[in-house]
Amino acid sequence: MDSAKKIVFCLLLLCSLSAWGRVFLHWKDSPIPPPSSLGVNDLVFYWKPGNPVSVMARAHRQGYRVYLETTVQQAKRAAEECIRTGWTGVILDIPGSSSTETQAAVSTLRSGYPTLEVLVLVANGKQPEMLGSIVIKQDSVLEVSSPTAQPWINTNLATIKVEQRRRKRQVPLYTFSWSVPEDGPQKTLTAPDYALAVAEAGAFHADLVLQLDEHLQKGLNHHEADAWALWTQIRSMMNFYSHPTERALEPAANVAVVVEELDTSDEVLNLLARHNLPFKVLLAADLKSVDSKGADVIIVFAKPDEVMAAQIATLASLGKTVVLVDVHGRYPWQTSQPTRLNEHTVSYLVGTGAVLELSEPVTDPEVFAQDIRRLLGKKDSLLSLWNGLTTIAVPYKDRSGALQSIEFVNYAMDPLRVQVQVKGLFTSIRYETPERGCCQSLVPVRHDAFTEFVIPELRIAGRVHLDIQEGKSGGEGGIRTPDTR
Image (cartoon, rainbow, N blue to C red; front, side, top):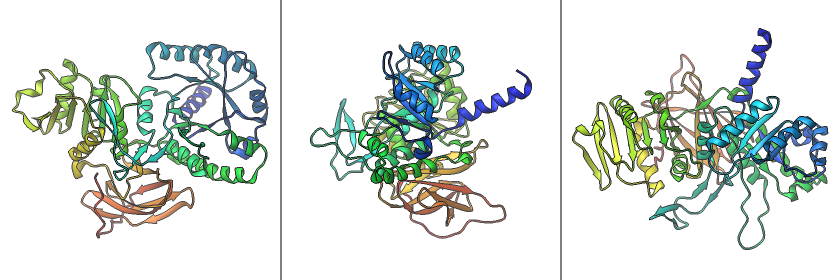
């Protein structure tokens, strides 16, 4: 391969790795409307040896990229079918966490079939929705609070964070099944239901295999006006997350969570996401690479060995707060006199930082997330919302570390007026929505090292662009203090 071809190949590879926000449709019915009508190019079909392939072949002839979803055990035969027919790739449905053997199988498949896309699917995602209760864990038993408490949100942000660490070569790809009521008829899915699912994946920089109910598929096939009116709203949301200018950005976070194993069902991570505490997930081996400027609080769920303990002491000495959960043993920072914070927590001062030791596991993730918010304090809170109990916001930065945008998802799907405080001094705030496009100028109000602004109406999704214009200063004035929850 000559140098020019190598450059082109590398650029294509980088684009494929950084692209996100793709929506794959899981299709069962036939015939299929053309790609130009649906605005989607990727179709997924369940596959096992012996299944009819006529629907897949027809989709391929229509111009769709066809993916076969299958198990690791059947992956090789599915790959051979794709090679034979010219289909695009294989999606592996791997339940639970990935074992070393599974990872090896994926690598072998990719090297053996380099012209195919081989993707790993998280099949146990949650239906994004707002529920009416908080679920807490007491003595290993899940308890549900009263309906008057803070609403509970089913979100896939924690799962996506775990997958971003687990598979650095692949944009997180997940799917979920629509919930079915135990009693009574199944709920008819609406355009906002589908739009929220698309918005969540796009806002959190992930790809989604979207399950369409058979009623909608048949309606689209039969050119029913109601079905196409619904689809137009879904397509509008997909278009909103196709901005190429957002591709180079990466999530900003000042909380690091260090775990022994990558677990997408960890409720602590879910509550950190729910409380808008921007975090990244690390393994113990990653601790030495923690950016001393980027992480203000490091939460450790892994038992420290000698090397890890030394790294924790170093981070604390640089002014970081390290929280160790369910810790027992002797460590270097314990030479100073501890301060007892409560029955289960002691704190050791180390340099300009501190190490907090919790003597038991986290039993109430809701309270734990609130404690982490208090540990950050106002000075180190990267993002705070007021009147945003049903909203999750994720900030994004460029490669220099400067905040560039914030993605918002409102799980209540009813219009909200949201007040936001973000760390940094910005002179221009531009607000973009699927309904009104880009952009509405919002008034920035600067206080100390923070900028505050009000989003006048957030329906399901919105994006704020943060700009600094040279030669201009931010406004002065009052705004209601954001709720730190």
